[in-house]
Image: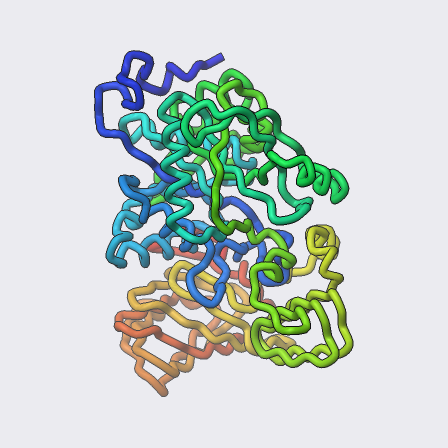
Length: 504
């Protein structure tokens, strides 16, 4: 078995709280963004999960990055996300890098999981990346979909966790329960072993409601937030000791890593062989170095529509409404409209979530079961499980306006500086009408500038490219005609984003 000493400098002779060599102490945020947010369907989709959703402001991913970057002494983050979401993550970090105080976001390292294998392997790859870049930092592992307020309370908990991590401990953040929640694991607090740092008496699996109520009645139990701090080398040592199969696979795929633009990729076949296991099961519940600090803040993992209801402002009848909503004789409901009027009459304890292509209606107390409904939709092959009508690409986005027999109408928005691939279609022709901005359009060997109210025709089988050379978003209406209009009818000859030649 490979041991941790193989890939990390020895820290055993370093001064307390200092990495080997005496370099300055560092906290390295590790943002875990591999989740799919299945319980937040229909807003969260496979290709647009909850951490990147537009929440009427910054996305949860953006909030998590900003929360970490505003901590004193934090290095640029390491992000690990699904390969399919790489451009969503990169776009957020690039935008934050232009914001005063968040410039380090633009220097983030982005690791791409070819398949999801839970948090233990993800943190292992992050630890290996941190060690590769020098030193042996304290890793602050953060889920990308949490809401925490106020920031000062979070920063205080991080300082407490730092005490434990510098002492060679693996620290978990515990949250004071506000009710008998069944969607979280629990931590029973032990004795205080360092100032503000407590031993973990035991971890408790996600309980049913009766057991959750009993835990609250006993006292001394905290929600497991899924946030951790430990030194990078310590995590790998404990993983090698308690989950050697995970350690071995992660070390192997790390050695074979490749770089693609600003991303670090891993072999899909090799990584798929890794056990699918959480950091709790792989390390925290097995190590004798686990400890806990209290997070004295408002906290939610926003993991279900019920958590959205609980976080929202409510009217005198207990209703939480988002969007264009009208309700009458309705009580204790969550009503969410994204694209049109939602009208509710005579409902009680119901959640309604509307998007452009789907509507979810369920009792509020069934919010943890949305993933069962999603599984059923996947069995039916429904495209609504993966994509919205608005589909995001690294250059911007598009949405389908009309889909008929042998024709489709789309609205395409290209960001300033955005460049679509040089491509060709076997089964469709396209007619582009420019409605906003300026476009540079290539058709075969001809390149020209097209302005508002002008149009271009792209015959079937013709090589073409669309670019936005301007400073405002480019918007076109695209009319497709042909026998097959699927997004997989595309052959790429050149792509500045490094995408596959035969995939969207």
